[in-house]
Length: 407
Image (cartoon, rainbow, N blue to C red; front, side, top):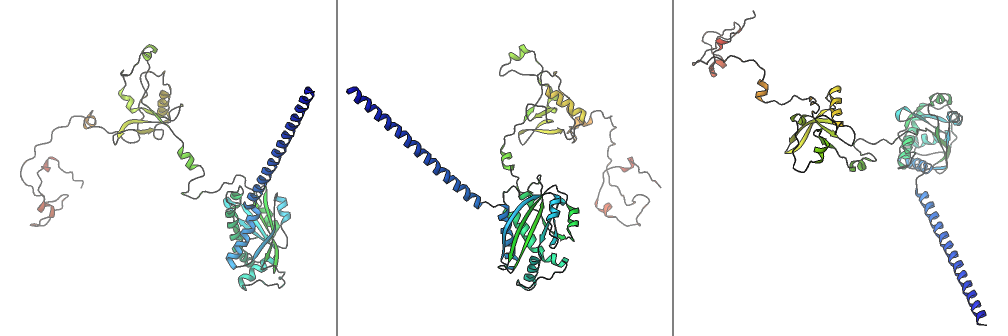
């Protein structure tokens, strides 16, 4: 009996343990489902706040009409698709106003507006209101195109600005109103991009008094990059400026036996040629030298005046770089210094070296000289006194250097 009671007790504890595991498992699954629902809700909220191209186009149209004419414009059912050149020509409505858009780097886009939209934009600018009178089915003119230009320019500028940090912004920005086109055939001749982004939107003007469709055709430019204004740092300029850059100045190279190299100790003197000061090489890494120059100082600090690669002849620069690359195997003689672009500074003794001896100048004789007679046969009047002769005394005998009379 005690054995039976103990066995029953162990079975009960095992059952309780299993129930506990099941309960913990169900609670863990429930918590996981709760976190998933919260993450999904946060993702939907983020996507709702993000500016999609369709949402940006709706806002750009409404904002432009409101700022320009205090016109209530509502965009419905904005759709986006991608078409090839044949698809673009097929999507150009024959009864709509067809306009050309000038883009960056010579690319072009197109926009079409239904007749009711053109009529409503003309009325709001001429009559300060939108009516419901039937539109006149007449051919479009350049004046009709000019009436739509303010809305299109404002829409295109805001459309790109609202897509801040969006991948499509470089392909959308930079377009503006260009001119009116006669028909779809003329537009087809201007198509040069392999594909086009097409945006279609239904517009309501003045609470539904006018209603029509707008179609926007922009070329796909995968290689387009956002233009950086002059003076504004690039996207990675700050990070690149923080990267460490090291440059080594190599004074020269010596060739020593291995036994002597192993015996070197702090304080030992190595014989260096004076020409090494004229053949310093600069290394930006373990590779070949990138520049060379002459060692000196400025403001009490060591400095190197660069002499190549900008001014050195090709052959001499290669000789210098080759001598610098052979760090351990180069002969004791280093490469000859590359001549600098600027003239070297020499002392008086160096400048006089190699010049022939000149005779001494004659001793100057004392006394004043009257140069009132002038030169080249020009003699002033008798008794007249020139400014130089009256105020200047010379102590040189000009008779030693006679002037030649050329005629």
